Image 1 (tube, rainbow, N blue to C red):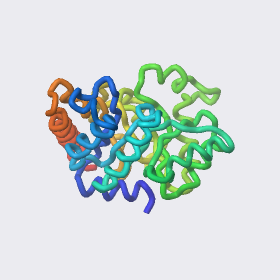
Image 2: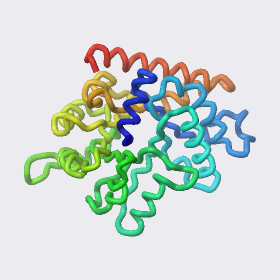
Image 3: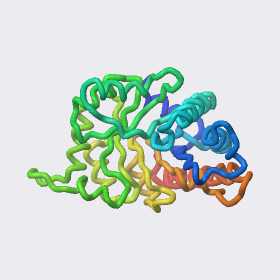
Image 4: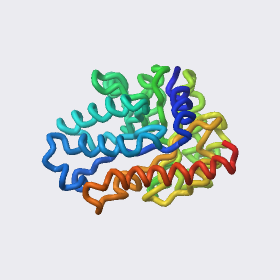
Length: 274
């Protein structure tokens, strides 16, 4: 089974398309966890315990783990999520050429890591992504139209053909999808672009960030983000820091936030019959 088949099974099991972003900013981890050997791991474990029944996937962002203790915390996090039967999508936005690209791709199967999918940056072209694309069992989620305001600076530039760059990226990703393991990152903060990308790649699952702290369009995320019911709508800060001011109750608050988002998205799924 490839990543999206496994994801489809998980979505059916928990009746949820929620991706919980595990971005444990050390400055926001509760004080009572600060003395733990690996505070980020201690934080994530509690978040996973509280949210896994509502999570179709967990999405740790590599930026919060890129130090020796951080990598240890990430390995523990990935293993623990897998122990709950939840797939892990590493948000690393990797791409490069030659040996560097192959080394980056090792994150997909590194001993103790073995994530199920990874986000990649298409700016360097097909050869920079080949070490990822050639792994049919792993998901490769290509940045297309991101949720940040500055995404339009480059992604909306009009090409000589008259199409914006993000539309060309979507079309190329479709060509690169020989192993049926490619998806796209398309933000919920740009619902019109989200609809346009769906028209270009009607059968490709999306990872849709921006629902939560960024205030993206949840209805559009569901209507256009899912292909045959498969896709992910991510919230990070809006879930994991929902109880930031509640001390030891932070995890319960995160669980409730994940449950609320699941219900909100499921209403739209039901209305759209997805």
